[in-house]
Image (cartoon, rainbow, N blue to C red; front, side):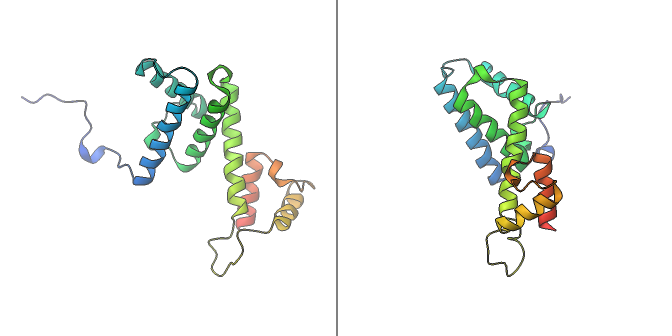
Length: 164
């Protein structure tokens, strides 16, 4: 009689792409740098793992396996790790996680807006002209031409408008 194992069948395991492997390697490299910088290098792996899981849960509301993060989530995660690298663990809180989500998304949407239109054939310029983006933002958000200061939600709406 065969006993059931906890291992997942080969077909049920998620395939990790080379791009995901690079993201995970970068993620672990940054965490190791954080641990070294703030005196956690000699702590047990269990404590390090618990901290990584805690930060992940604070950001996403529940723990998401790094191999399952999408590009937006990676952007937010790397921004949060950047904050941890700069300020350390003592400043980390759920509020800081919220800030990491907002600022990480804002950073990504700004990048997308600056490069909107690159997928359109025969576009020679890199993205939409800044003056055009400012005009659209002003029209859409009550005269605010400082489009880089918009919230992540507003930047997403601006991106969709510019893209269309």
